[in-house]
Structures are given as C-alpha cells and as structure tokens.
Length: 325
Length: 290
Image (cartoon, rainbow over all chains, first blue to last red; front, side, top):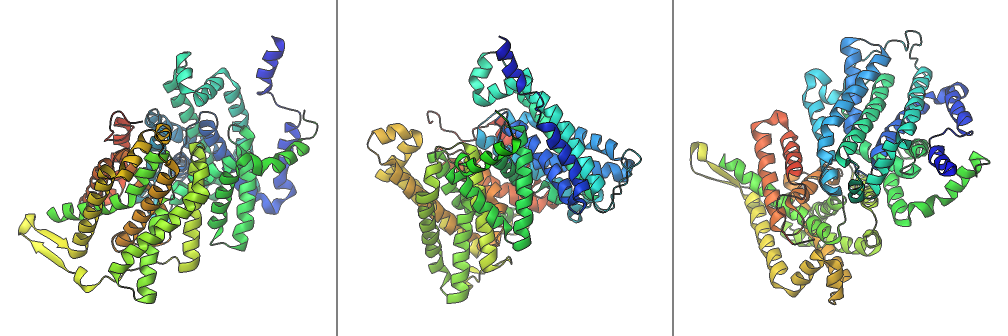
C-alpha cells in the first residue's frame, strides 16, 4: 500500500538533481552575459512547448494552432504596456488572462471530431487571429507590427537592459514557476484523468470521468501558459508582430516537443535548448535555407523512429543526471 | 454578380482538382498528408520552367506536369510514405510538415523566391461578356478553359471510380482495408496507384492554377489550409463531397474577397470552423462506411 502510494507521489516530487540544474540555469545569464538573449529565447520557447505538452503530451490533442494563444498573449501584453501602464508583471497577468479566456472559448471547438477535424479547427483559429491582427491596423499596427512598446522596470527596480540579462532572469523565473505549478497539475488526480482520456477516451468516459469538461479545462490552462510565453516575448523584445501567429511557430513548437519527448515536462525544456542551439548554428551557416534542414530532420526523425534516433542521446541524459536509478 | 459566381466556380473547380488526390489518399490510408501542396507546386514549376526555358507549348506542359508529379508521388509513396501508414497521426503530421519545409526550401534554392508567371497562349487570353448591367456575365477564356478541363476530369474520375474494376477495388479498400485485402485485392498496389494519380492531379492543378493562384515557393504552405478545408468539410468517402465543398469554398472565398475585402480570409475560416463544429465528420458523409 505504502509503496504504491510512494510510486504515484514520486512523480510529483522534486528530485535531488533538479535543484542544482535549475540553479545552474538561473546562473547562466550571469556566467555567460553575452548569451543572455538566447537564454531568454530558450526560456520563452520552453514555456511555449510546456503549454503544448499539456494538451498534446498529456491529453493527446493534436493542435497545429497553438500559436494563436501565444500571439494573443503577446499582443495583449504589448497593448497593455502601450496603452494602460508599462508594469511588466501586470502585463504578464493580462496576457495570461486574455489567452486563457480565448482558450476557454476555443475549447468548445476541440471537443468533437477526429484528429483531422481538430487539426483543422486549431489551424483555423490561428489563421483567424492572424487575419484579425493584420486587419485591425489601428490597434495592432497591422503588418508593420506593434511598435513603441516601452516596458517599465521589473518590480519597480530592475530595468530591462540591452544585453537581456534582466529579461533572461525574468523569463527563466516565470518558466520555473510555471514548471513547478504544471508538475503539480499533471501529477494530481486531475492530471491522471487527463492521461486516462489520452489513452482511451471511451473507457475514461465509462469510468465516470467528465471528458468534455476536463478537455475544456486543460485546453484553457494550456492556452494561458502559451499566453504567458507570448507575453514574455512581447515584453522582453518590446515588439509584437504578425510573426507570433505564423503557422511555422505552431509547427516549430511541435517539433521542439517531439525532439524533447512528449508527455514529459522536461521534454519541452530539453527540446527548446536543442532546437534553439541547432537553429542558431544552422542559420549562421545558411540563413535562408535552414528550414530545409529542419524539414529533413523531421522526416528522418519520424522515418527512423524517435526512440532509435534518440537512444544515444537519452543515454547521455542519464549519464549527466548522475546516480539516478 | 454572375461574374463573381463564375470566377468562384472556376476557383472551386481548381481547388477540387488540387485536393481530390488528398481526399482519396486520406480516405484510403487515413494518412494526414500536409505535403500535398508540394506536389502541386512541382507541377506548377514543371510547367513554368518548360515554357520559359524550352518553349514547350502550354497544352503539352499540362500532361507533363501531371506525369512529373505522379512519378514523384509514386516514388515517395514507395520509399517514405508507406512505412508511416500505421503510425500515429502526430508522426504523420510531423513527417509531412517536414517534407513541405524541404520542398519550400528546395524550390527557393533552385528557382528563387520570386513569383513566377505563366505566358498563356493567345487564344486563352480574351474575355467574353454576356448580358447587361447587374446581370452581366464576364467570362475570362482561361477560367472557362479551367472549368472545362476540371469538369472533364471530374466526370472521368467519377467514371473510373464507379464503372471500372480498379474503381471498385479502390472503393472496397477505402471502405475496409482488411476485408479488401482478404478478398484478394492487392491493397498496396491500389494505394500506390491512387497516390501517384492523386499527386499527378495535384501537379496538373498546380500547372493550371499557376496563373490564377500565383506560384512561388511558399505555395504548399499558403494553400495547404485550403486543401485541408476541402477534405475536412467534404469528407473523404466520395468525390462528390469534396467537389461540393471545393465549389462552396471557391464561391465563398471569391465573393467574400470581392464584397468585404477588409475581412479577407476571415469568412472562409469562420465558415469552416462553424461547419466542423456542426458536423465534425464533414458535410457529406456516406452512411455505412468506415
């Protein structure tokens, strides 16, 4: 009895190796100040991938339009800073809330139908929002993007600097907080019902899980987290453009998640690190054609099979964690 | 107003030819192929390059575009697609997105990212006008040509599907793959043939549409959503469903862009979401299928 409970609970507990890992991650902007900007980007993308993981990895909803919520968060945070007040934390909350409301509304669209239907509907929502941001140019600046967003200092004390150290810490802290909450979330009984729905929806329904309301809630949460990622991007770059709604952003984040592993919270983080470093390296060699290599990578990844391709890599991962049973 | 209807029908017919291959392969193999537009792009580029570099006449280019895309589709089906039929949808989506990205980057590398133009022969350039005032019907000759070609193809496809032996094998495989295989139908060959023909039709559509839709390396991504709408709304079990869906989409898109240009693609996407919420399996689903 006791051991079963332990195994169930152990998933939600913080392991010993995780504290130094996060401490190291938070120290990176200090150790490598010239790389603070990319650290910031990685943290944001990791947060976005984490959001997708909640619905794709834990609930099994294939979405090609998660950038809709990312963009919603970005635009609402940027507009809030521009029109109301420049405080970053309040802006972040506004971004989260706006994306969450949108997610709650959109959750009605993903309850029915097959994978194809969901794919189409999520894709459609993303495209509609992009059209909206494009056409409402008096509000969003249209195709030129929303310019002139000036952020106030964080907590009234830390100014955003040009090298992105503050930004990196800010994003990293938000990532850490969301990660901690998300871990509680997926290891709770609620999270267990999500996995049941992913594995077999019919049986989940038969044992009395209210499938539709669970799907709606997790979709809203995932949307809110994606909104947080978008808000961070808009705040740390002081800019929001139509690019945040683009299709390739949804595709990229899916790729990130698959590189790192779905249904595993560190998957998004690991994938984001690998993806961003890879993007940085390849696009410095061939800036224009780096999508070719990403495409090739995807094709190989799927054809060869993720498990086989990644085996040496997980072997490395286990070695690095040190002493894990 | 009739002109808009006419243009919408031409556009819808074109979309149908582009997407019908996708509908059949998706119904057949339950494979979500986002790379379908890449075959259309291949057809378009074959036409444009043959006409520009080697002065091949336009009408000869069309069958060549079909053959080129069909051969490419057949090869890819045999080598890359087949192992993925029984993988989860997520893998299929990732795989075909990857293929699309590669196609876009390859086209940019070899041909350049600029928009390509097709020089139509003289006899396709004119425009005929009938009637007066609000009921005037202006028909561009090229659009008339598109409608004629696509209508002929549709009738031909329907004939093959309903009357021939290959057609009944195909329908049997779509309805139930395992039973069809049990009855001695070589399902793999049926898949291969269908995939090749579907890709070829996409290539032909790309060649025909290069003038109307525009042709540049981002073509597969730009029109992917339209193909998918046709398939998702029309259902995958017949070809009349996608045909009606394509016509609906074509007319709605052209009319929407004409009357309310500020809304852009908004109308089409909202319409699609509304239809899919209302009928998640598509508008025209045959009962008793899979």
